[in-house]
Image (cartoon, rainbow, N blue to C red; front, side):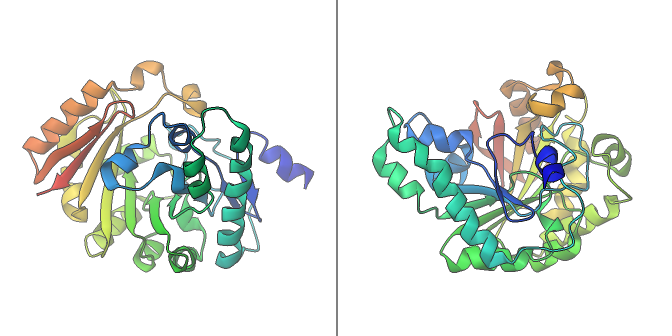
Length: 295
């Protein structure tokens, strides 16, 4: 247990759930509770930031992306996976515990705080790669059974899991546009590029809302023409062009100059719009993200 605690010591603000899951209240939930703003996902997709549960079922990742702000090595290999019903129940309980301190916080909207204790949206995207959890499909079904919508963000390296899951909204997050750039930017543990291509193909046949998120690094991958073939393969409903943010552990690998301004993201998106079937429909300057929709 001591070794595990030391391994997780950098995860400040996280509540560990069971053997391999975690919950964390995000910045935008806290801002929403005080009526100081909300996440771009609320602006783009209509979800309520204060009712969103942010969690992961897998505190591990099979990539070591240069832009990732999270600690890259978290936990040892696990021999036993927790059941989906346990993860869902304990994640909701963890959210309630994390919210309990807000009752005494000045400026909190008490009606929103009451609603926050009954989350109706889950973002399975907190840290690690969720498709590493082998029962992800059942986890989504368990959340669905509680009338919660599910957003799943994956790096696309486990196409068999991508095939099985049916979240309300499926994201595949891309930084690389070729096998060579994948090896350089994502530093995979093994040859995974073909698996990502397969996940993009699977995405094109998925029901539900489908999104490609492009994490853009200034001077590195801000070339919209290089992503076109991947976008055409996946045929997503939406594309999010989002700036790399110079935060956390990424600061050990990238200079602050690698973080694009919102104007850079807007220019990238306008160029992508001009060469594709996608049109700009929304943007969030504070989050440095532009949304394009397939027309």
